Image (cartoon, rainbow over all chains, first blue to last red; front, side):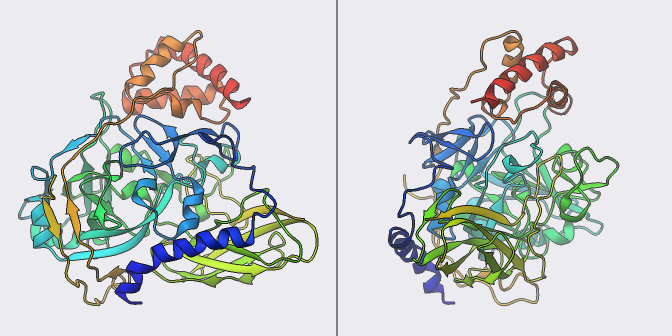
Length: 413
Length: 116
């Protein structure tokens, strides 16, 4: 894979995909499952009516879940256009109501302090010129992505599948910054804070921590670039922590403070929020009690069909292209398999270009329906450690880590 | 506004021993950093009128009404849990004596939402 290919292919492929879309499917009218009016969309669960908004700075059309602090979902058709989610369509999720809207790039400082020998206060210029620059393609996915599909339903942000995105992140290794600060013996965790805050004094500031070895693994980075541009304000300008393979809650936005701790972080956002059952698939029976909880951590594999939706119709005897995106979670993708009969039989899909193990990967398959009727298309990702998407959905009271193999019901006419 | 910084990154990463090596890439993307000044929109979502809507107004100190109105069907007991979480974890200034009325209000509004 050459550098040039990486830079050039997404836009070209986007064009070809768009051309292909009109050539093969949707001959008999589009989906009604997600359609509503031009200014709204109906997500496929109860109380799923959503406004489509263009009111947010540096953002194109997004699904509005909450205005303040903003929760904006990426319309799912965006994922059919390529593996890199455009910055202006990338999902947005803030916890606390005070979000700076004016940030002076020259005055901004990143402070590094705590259990270390040399506290730092770094300007953006220093960060960009005094440390080696690295780039990684990585998926940022909300812990509660797809929460709206939980059954029974759970309270929280009622996302469909669009609280995720993949970008090329440019920045510096957290390890390099910590090394310059001289982490002291006995360091246990590293805690990250951003410029956002609550309005009430009692609201706990949004702080997240990683174990020291994870923080120093050379992959975790501090990004100032997103798809080759500075980050949109709502995605964390000027700096965001990038934690490849881990859920978005750790990817602290507007990162301006790093503290090395000599004990495990017991702040609210680590000890009380974003906890999952310490069980397979973080799954329990509704109502179950007495299970151990742990902070959410590594992502799990997922895959999606992006060019067909529930209710779409295709023609018997005509070849249908199915395509989509998949990812391995905290490691690369081994393969993607698909089924046209609700999971009774599975066939390998063709994997397209590999942009790195933490990135979306496109896949495709073709089939020619031979009989009219309903068909349940399914897709399943299997990662390089052999972990595959489960056939049944997990459940937990937080609505976290959904990754059941997805089904799409189409009609062959 | 002229860019404060333009970073022309050199080919950066030498293959290292860690698992990071294959994922992190050489790159040459110049990233220009400008100061920003943006405005966030105000919410147009409002709590429907009704007994308890005045108490619900306190919720708006920290967040707009939209996410509350977009919840799935929740029982009054589940609403009390949410209200108490807002009080205990985030400091929402909702009095003990207001929890019953607020939870009744949210239960009713929420039930109406499920029919839409």
